[in-house]
Image (cartoon, rainbow, N blue to C red):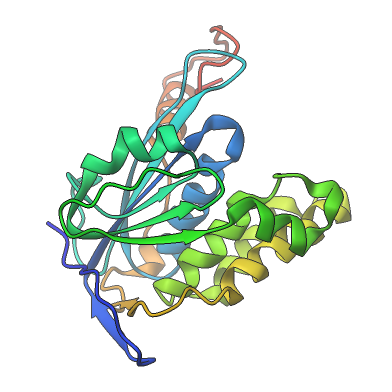
Amino acid sequence: MSTATAAVSSSDSKKTLRNAVIRFAGNSQDGIQSIGGFLARLAGRTAQEVMTYMTIPATISGGPSIFQVHLGSGEVLTAGDEADVLVAFYQHSYDGHFNALRQGGICLYDSAEVKEIKHEKGVFHIGIPFTAATVEAIGGSAKDRGKNMFVLGLIVAVFNLDKEKLVGIISRQFGKKDESVLRNAMLAFDAGYAYQIGDIEKFALAPGEADSGHRISTDGNQMLSLGLLAAGVRYGAAYSITPWC
């Protein structure tokens, strides 16, 4: 389905792609749904098509979770059968989702968490200290909070996405919170964006073809809620972690 390829290159040239499927695998507490949502909203602002898929553990304490984003310059009708890029935050993330990578895909993983590497399918592995690099960027008190934003910066750099527009989306998201929240988020993001990954070919998504003036980026939960409101529903009750609440 997707046209991305994993390739080693010593040049700064970028390979243009029409589609890219990216799967973030970690725990729900890591904020992978947040960064997946940022990428989806960015697609809506750059005339690209997007579809996403996520899993959320049915426990308040959280647990293993994924968020998959399929970005495309043309029509995108599914969230993607295989991932071009797997971002694995933990060993269980890697073990559980390695098979979702296509032949010759790319795996970005936290080198402090993932130890056992599978030499199969020609996958190109890149170990990066997500947590340590985030702590270094934000400060020792950060622990591992913000590593999702570090990873988002990596992805934006690898795929040459519109950084300026994404920064605007991030600023609007965190702007109403304490100023330290936005500051730390941007410190982590900028550290990921500037991180030197090594000898891997960089990619660039082809310009979007959709009419950016007549489209929105949304999800099923939001559209279901709008449909219920339009139908006259004014009250809803559900279990506390049900996503539509």
